[in-house]
Image 1 (cartoon, helix red, strand yellow):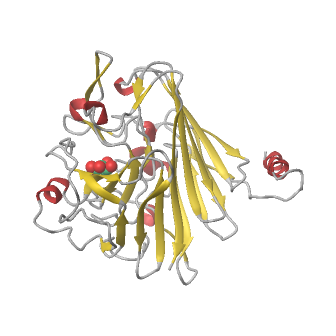
Image 2 (image 1 turned 60 degrees about the vertical axis):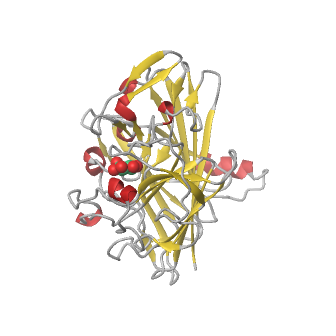
Image 3 (image 1 turned 135 degrees about the vertical axis):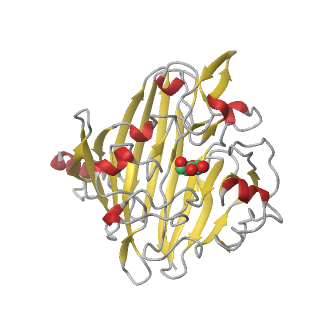
Length: 372
Ligand code: BGC
């Protein structure tokens, strides 16, 4: 397998036998209760950055990247072993599907039919339902991508799964480039009209030795956001962020306004809101930029999606034992989940999340690391 991959890479480079990327390293990660083997793939680039991916939930397990002194640390939350991912309730690192974030009352209409989804968040359906894509064992294979080591994961979500219509074939390709980018390409097709909103739920802390993420300095390239009701369902309005704690158009510490007396912050228990990116169309553009002042680590998020969910880990409570037995406390990490807006199937004015037979869903997100 390793040799075939190296040969493939050499051929891709036009027959000049230069190896463009080290193939992913594959190792056993455990077995599920129903006997399925789960693997861990480690991608390494020439800068010494490592990304580990498991085919359980197509989850990102580790992102190890240097700070400004060259010290390599793991900047995402997660678990040491499969067992943690099987029991996880926080969606650490996972691919979320079929629908990232909430669908109100677990119901939506498509062509005159009402679909009722699995409800797992009060009366709402969150992140795909009771058994979302984050709990599926995906098929995985290493790929000969030209821009770096890569893993392709595929999953067939059957017609009716968690209440969603259509057999949906999903593919997620993770590539670690030589520019320290973790690139995620999502694609899907269906045999029946359905709705779809895929994202990755990595929780970042660019200074993992620090206490929380309140000192991280954030820019979100968004003029508007989608306020929510008490069930965290968008009200449908798209107000300007100007003059609110949701204005991250200029670099601002995450903690600067998080405790302000603001109705939306209260409803979210902090930030847990979708921002309407001011990019136009499907080009892959900058959505957010985060700088951690102590380590100098910088994370840039680029996406083809129209929105990003900024979530400050408000519901983390130390109950899940993570890597090295660490208790992940409230606000010890943040998520920037690129996406279509929550509850879009019930908001016809939001960009559509419908996918029809014969169409191809395609979406790209890049998490790019550097230092300053
Ligand atoms: C949601 C939060 C939720 C978290 C973990 C985020 O995408 O917006 O409300 O608690 O995921 O499930």
